[in-house]
Length: 193
Image (tube, rainbow, N blue to C red; front, side, top):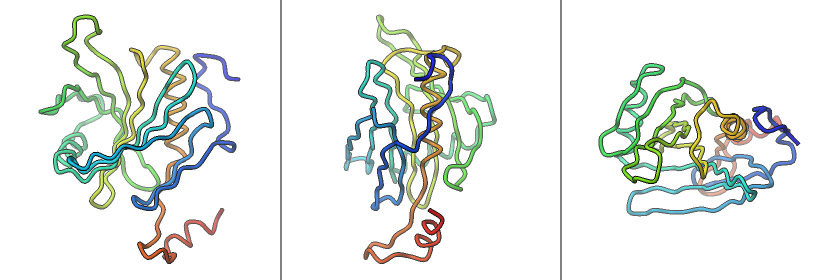
């Protein structure tokens, strides 16, 4: 067991694997997490939700959308310089770019978001981390969700971010054609296993 606040990780070798042929990806997640899926046809989005079934209830969501609105949000965020903040029109979130990165060989952007709350009994900001990847016509959004308010320097946040980073490190795009016949890309990508 890891010490709380250590920000250390455990081996992913015993984790479960979720594979999605429709959107062409797979990801590993801890056995203490439960998987669920939500489709929002009105906004052309699907959310893959992985939630920890312990007292912490940390969740990681992978959202996939081809929405024009989200493509504009992605474009805006890609233009940010590190540590630059921006409020995106129509979203109650202040985004701050953390870094450019790669996810499964595809350029991505990592940013934090502070949710602006107008509710009197809720603190004005809730911290979250998100990574966005544009692949083909789809935008993949990876979001770390916590059921409580944290700051990135808190010990609990360090643990949550470490789990998020581990899940991100296992994500990869996979290729298979819609007829179910293996493509050369799929064979090459999986021959090293």
